[in-house]
Length: 191
Image (tube, rainbow, N blue to C red):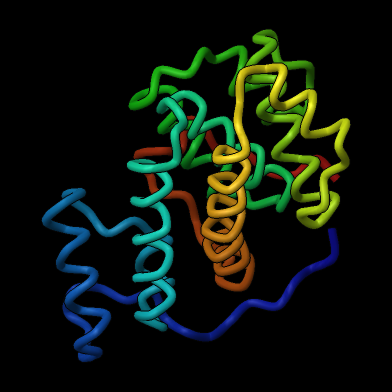
């Protein structure tokens, strides 16, 4: 892949003079015990971090997916957008927080066949939504419904795509480094 633009904006800390960013980064420290590198970059435009964080929480709390399914959606979007940071981060979270089978996570990372049929249908439909720019065919939706999902899940995937696009694109322009605790699940696009 050709070298892409890298912003000169700094990664912010809780010591920043930007009051909007400071409040959000302090919240991250309270709730997560850390400021992930992604948040340190998103905080340059506090509205971006707040939108990302709120969207993520709403997707996770109200999206109708299990924690395993949530990670599948996050990984598929991040893989499709070639976001090294988010693929690595969600792989780590899948392994240690959401208990996604490693065979599923690795299949998504390597663009291989997912060994679980329902999760494969979820992955396939998430890709359809991305590649067809939110315009699935009746056949695409029928296959998704057959796997046990509903139109409300489609709306939830739209939320996830929007939210992950915010983080994926931000990571692209910052060339965000994976947090050290997640290094065992580092990933790079294969081209």
